[in-house]
Length: 408
Ligand code: NIG
Ligand code: FE
Image (cartoon, rainbow, N blue to C red):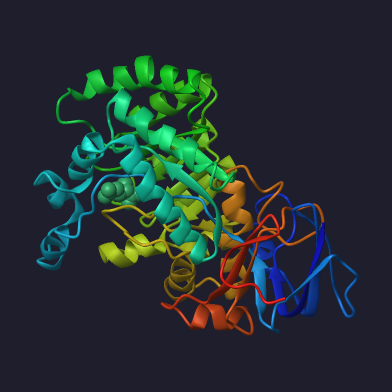
């Protein structure tokens, strides 16, 4: 089966199979009047002018086509919602104050522990479809609302089941998301390293291990211990760092060889240097900054220092209950001062690299998977500019339309 996507008004894509940094991050390919030839779920070729013959012709209506978006940081599997915290937030309570009042992560932990696996699956499956409707064709999903072995495993089994809906999901064990109320901190550290990580790795339930390394949560030394332990069991390290305060998370990321270090809204020059020297991808989460009314972070400093920057949603029930990666992209441009070209790389190729999928995803070029989005926009700038409304017309995964009505 060969499909030809024709009448593409603008085709915008980064190129390559590894994360891009510095000037290369914004140096994308933009073609007018383009076509994409798909063969057996993969991109065969891309060009302009008269298109080659195929079994099926798909008219893109003169619109913008980009690679499918890659959301490389989400907490998609959880029980309940936290809309009740809105009033506290609006009354000026901080994220940590809400946590201390029994809200925050710990209230979602209670609801996730109480939820059945099927209920968690049904809810996450609907959210995954919602993300697809916004153009997200690959995603990373974390556990971290169990803080005990059986609930963490339950969340990770849900992610495994979701892979039947979308094969391009990465699973991350985030047992170190908070300390459970029922256990001493040191005992929980031992439990993570001696019980949880070995069990989760033995069951093949996660590829990555993450730690919330920040003020009031896990220290840099604790993060290092957990991530090195995960690494011994084959889990690739990632970190949540510098969201509230810089406490050495970026240096830890570099030290343990993390694939990415995420949040980074408080990261200064030394932290940027550490990421650069450690070859760590910076995953920026501007929708979280928006919802928490917090600083956005030094995106430009990272790009200028040669750190590859990715942008993701951080979808979770507390700090950003939003699955629109296009919204995060607009926020990254307005508040992080990225260009539309840089942000496209951030939400596609660099996102794919942050979850080890850049070999097959993240760009529209020969040999990559035919994951693409036809947008209701004439060009890349229009997509960023028409923020806050869903601009997807059709979303394709491996050449097959998963959202929207196909025009043939
Ligand atoms: O990435 N920062 C830590 N964890 C999540 C928030 C989790 C929650 O509030 O439920 C985040 O923002
Ligand atoms: Fe997060």
